[in-house]
Image (cartoon, rainbow, N blue to C red; front, side, top):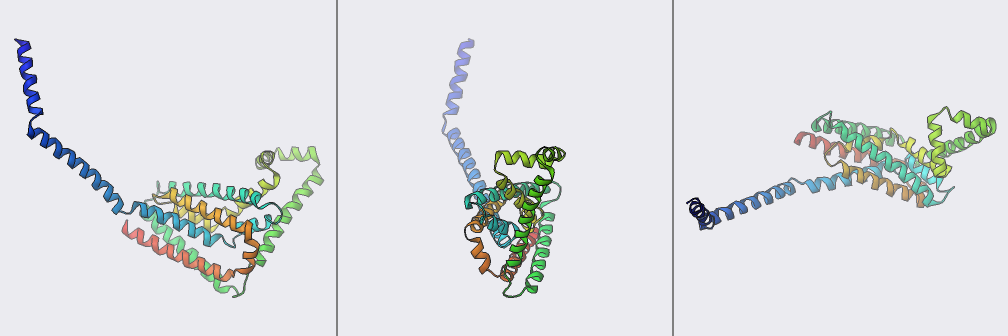
Length: 287
């Protein structure tokens, strides 16, 4: 009796599942799910997520290109490329700036955890306005034919002073005494360790670029630009911008530095910062 009842129940369920009504309902539900998924994808495309990522990437590339040409890190690469091979200088300078850029981008994105994205956009707009104003004032004070000779001379003196200090330390301290003195400084110990892995000149170029970029306008700008949701595209764009500038510096930087007008470059940089300020101000009001 129980076997017959079970067979009847199974036969009834099979008939229901195979009915046209159930099949039509399943087809409608599947179609609705596919339509919802397609709608979500289309909504993301309509919201401009890929475009936003592209804009973040290109904004970072352009900002680095404008602010780094003729900057201290650019001139360091130019002068060091006259002493060492171009590939050697490029690898050291580009590595230093890439690491600094990644760290700056991560710091900028972490700031969003404490400050809302809207207020971050307002702060970014204000910061870019300040940079634009300062560069405008600096550019207007420059002579029309102002070049980078003074900056080149200043950086060259710094490099010469570092070389001279290193030689004087070796002469005055002696081998064993010098090692003992370095043991008291963590920074010097790390420098010596890196010099064992790489060459001392490679480490020198790396450290000089890292310290020159620390607190620079481009670093602060990357921290600001990386505060949005596309921060990896911002970081990638900034790294690409630094790679391009380093390549230009070690290949034709000396010629370019003698031909460009610092007044023009400075005013162009100010215009770009004003444009960035307008973009972030608009973004702050639309968030």
